[in-house]
Amino acid sequence: MTVDDTSSGDGTDPPSERSVHSTPHHEVDHTAEPTDDPLAIRLEALILGSDRRYTPFQAARTAGVSMDLASRFWRAMGFADIGQAKALTEADVLALRRLAGLVEAGLLSEPMAIQVARSTGQTTARLAEWQIDSFLEGLTEPPEPGMTRTEVTYPLVELLLPELQEFLVYVWRRQLAAATGRVVQAADDEEMVDRRLAVGFADLVGFTRLTRRLEEEELGELVEAFETTSADLVAAHGGRLIKTLGDEVLFAADDAGTAGEIALRLVEAMAQDTTMPALRVGIAFGTVTTRMGDVFGTTVNLASRLTSIAPKDAVLVDGAFAQELTRTGDAPASETEAAEEAAAAAERARLAEKEGRRDEEPPPPTYRFGLQPMWQRPVRGLGVVEPWLLARRGKPST
Image (cartoon, rainbow, N blue to C red):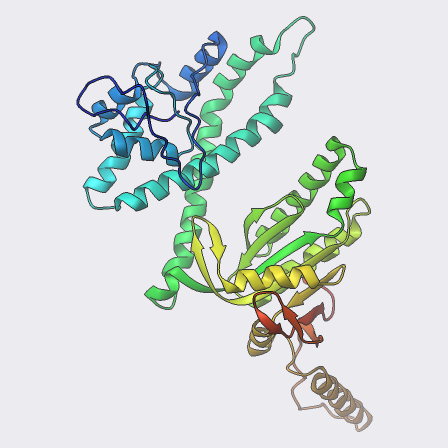
């Protein structure tokens, strides 16, 4: 629900003709009306913790916020315009008061407060839709013949609500602690905003053809399995899942070694699942701008382009990523030199054993990854790049 931002602000009724101030993120529906379904109203009061009491103008005035700012806050949170219907609650007033208070106290600028509202609204909207579609819908199947879903929904929500709320706050605090820790460890203030990261895309090959062949339910199960597997592997090995796009996931890691391990694990996991299409991954390393949980910049664009040209069941990386792996000792600078080092070490060990003595020379380095240069090629919008094929050397660590 969105307040009507065209009220005069002086207590008079809003004009009959209103201008539409949409944002790039939300198309505002000025015809939306709050529901009058009795069960929906009861559920709304249960979830929000209070009954409908205010029109948008009354809510803004009670919160001490201008109609213009209130409208921008609510639109940023993703709620539709309800005109001047009496549909807002004490919770809505409190939300406006808190956001405005952060601005008044100088803790946030007004644009930043709107950005906080937008990022929170977009994230929780998706979470709420997922919970209703995949979680509550299944649980509200009537447990006994003759019972309606309506009779089951209210008591179920009443039981689940406090537990889900506590769990949501716990996960958010955990994620906030992890994100804050990464930022404060940055080398300098500039790096806190524009950071050097490894960014990777993992893409299911031939997904468009699958959409024509599979039933909707089968396609949904495949996408869910892909997203679940990807999210688990990325998190387990120290990366961050930025977003999922159905047949594609975007992830990031603070170092190239972590990103390389994630990429190869993803390819290996999908290859073991006969129901999954082939996977291809592209990774680039460099400066990345982070905004609202997303990542932007040339590095991200390059990772996307590398994914589009990667062979099936393979990982392509850019030159900066390859250099970072060699700098950290995760990959040899030259496969030929690595092979010569290994052969020389084996020969020294053989001679030492033959002569009945211990080989005092240190063993050759153990590398996690191998890099094979590929043909240089032009990449749209990025010029000529030299991709490298990333492979695993030895067995994966557990």
